[in-house]
Image 1: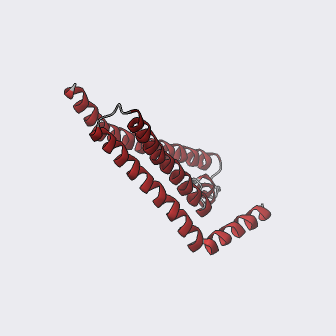
Image 2 (image 1 turned 90 degrees about the vertical axis):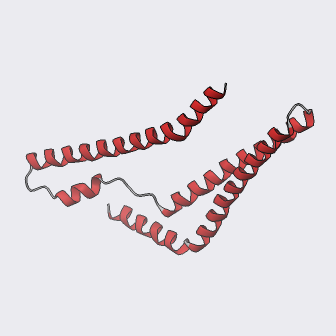
Image 3 (image 1 turned 120 degrees about the horizontal axis):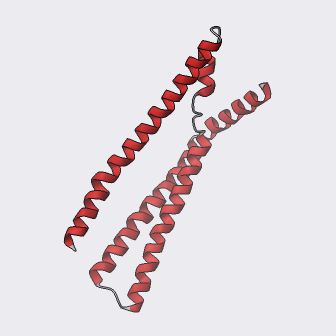
Length: 150
């Protein structure tokens, strides 16, 4: 049983992050290769093609400030609710009396950490929303003007 737990820890701590980074890098390389093929094909068909304009149109769109802020709020809510659910689960187990005290402490500790991280994300969202209000408004005006020009 201890060996299985050790293997799971090694897989979770070493193998999984390495695999995720490898997959991410492979996806980026494939995207770059596809863009390169498209540009080369465009040059072959029409030598007068504006490559800079083509690359600008093909470039992945960067996230807007508002989208970044909303993702912080979303993750804060999810992680905070996970923390609260750990607390409720611990209270339920404590009420039933079928759990070891050390295990309950671990559940409460995990719930506290998750709740703290969730609250930190939500506080970050609130503060960023106040601090970046002018930038968000300018970004929205820029998007509206770009839409009108098209």
